[in-house]
Image (cartoon, rainbow, N blue to C red):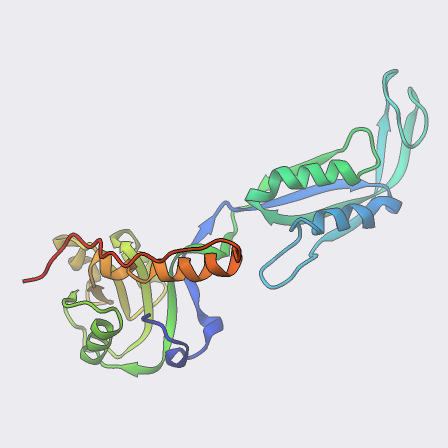
Length: 256
């Protein structure tokens, strides 16, 4: 792999080149004081309120609620047909987009009211834990030539196409496997010294504009280790199922 632990200045500095957007949602609901803890516990148990390395994150605020049930209602507080004013707590927490159905189900299951008032909105925040590509810093800066040689060795490629050298030490490295021309400006914006990707076209190299070194290592070469990562992950997660790692080289490109 290109980024080995000993070569990195600090693993926490690993960040996504293009953080994912619109994958974080926020739930706001309202409940009587006595039900707040059980509602939060139910939501926390399925992943609600998780922010990075922190769990059970929420915010509560006391307020006053009003309601009036019709003749078909079965109110927990007061009587049908009567206007009610009662103290309630607003509960808010974020959650991952894919958990929405489970969040709503857990909320209804834990909430004492017949009709549950709640809102769910999609946040515009970047998700710093999901995205495309990565950026990290080398522990020791390299010259451009030294880095390109290092890149050829670590990524087992016979050819590295690159943009014009800019006589700048390589410290901050951006990587995106597969066809990554669309992220050149993202790499520049994040201050990367080099952007390692593949399938760059002739005019893509002009976009470097002496701001960054672009290194095209080949599509297959940029993704060749993915199967090993998947094999390791699946073997660890599915212990009672045999996962076979293919040894077939599917690269359609040969070098003369």
